[in-house]
Amino acid sequence: MPYTFSASPTRRRSPQFRTLRDKLISVAGLVGQKVVNQEGQYLGTVVDLVFRWDTGDPYPPLAGIIIRVSRRRVFVTAQKIGRVTASKIELLAATIDLREFRGRNGEVRLIQEVLDHQLIDVDGARVVRASDLYVATLSDHVRLVGVEVGIRSLFRRLGPRSIRTKPVPDQVIDWATIQSFGGQNVKSELTLSARRTELRRLRPGELADLLEDLGRDERRELLTVLPAEQAADAIEEMEPEEVESILRESTQKEAAMYLSNMEPDEAADALRDMDEGTREQLIAHMKRDSAKKVENVLAYDEELAGGSMNTDVCIARNSQTVENIRKQLDAEDASLKEIESVAVVDGNGSLLYDLAILDLVVADPKAKLQTLINPTELVTVSPGATIEEVAESLIESRRSSLLVVDDDMKPMGRIFADDVIDALLPNRSSLRFPRLLS
Image 1 (spheres, rainbow, N blue to C red):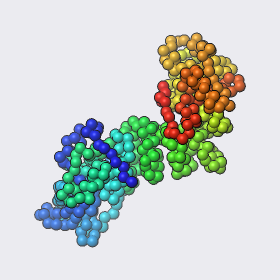
Image 2: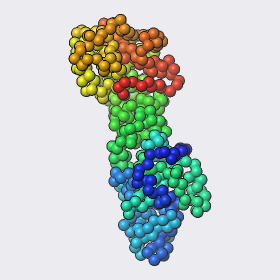
Image 3: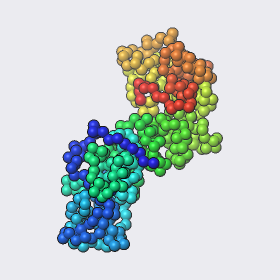
Image 4: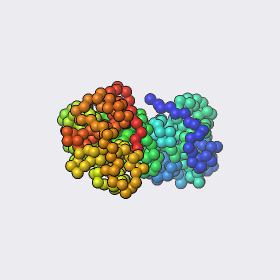
């Protein structure tokens, strides 16, 4: 079904786009319009517009047009096109080559492959469908510059020709903020776009919403061009049934890559919904270190602390200095995204204190961690503790996470308040509390 979008006058638009307000030409309105030669003689009608999709330009350039001449579909290159208006296209040549159109790599037909297809509006962080597309002459080249979405433009397309050709500039989204799907050899364009900052600046929750709205093929396409860590972060934010769908739709290699980059407890939750054979195959394809962490979580029932803990724990010796551990955190930030405290241990690895990051930040860099210890504040849970018991400990200690320790007081993992809420309220959407390092 079509996705609607309400464009706002405050939307981010490039300086180039703002100068094109009165130059926009509707692509849907061009279909069926006449194509004439230099003398104004009728040659045929517009069928489609072909654009280069692999240039990396925020506004793709016109490669040519497909026109209907009698019963033939003929391609005319952009070099032979003189002027494009809302009512006709004028060619520079008096005659045209009557060979049939054949698509080439890196080219996309707007009517057939983009109009009415799914797009990601990166600026609005949502999936939309292109109800109309807009071109304009920019620096002497015809370029794709905008898209319109929503039911109004669909109604306009169904109306008389005089209405179809009239754009509503305030409703047009700058194409520079759009990430498209579909078309020939479009993956190269997606890869180029993914290297820009637009997709990277979206939060995991926003990407999760986009992934849930996309169709199966488009979703896989987006996941393949995202960095593995960003894809995993987004998958973690999705509903359990959607996560299961993604893993089943992916190859074993792809699924294992996502699982390896997910938090161990999140990966374990996803694997629990799989049959035993599939689960074992996916674990076998995961990175060895990641697989071991996930297996440690899977060893416990999901209703126990051990089954909901994140096994990525930052551990520091009490003899280390504050400066040492700060450097360690800087170096390991990519894999320690959920850290809000540091587990301080003795020479045998037994827990002495759970040091909050904030205390670490304000401490004297040369101070040893043992001088920051306050053992009376230490609160831990065992891996066999129930989720209800963990919840009580969190409330009593007024903490947002607790360390899970074994019988020798050695840290095994950390369980967060949002994981407890997810476990206690399994039928509601996952909750995410802000954490200091994310």
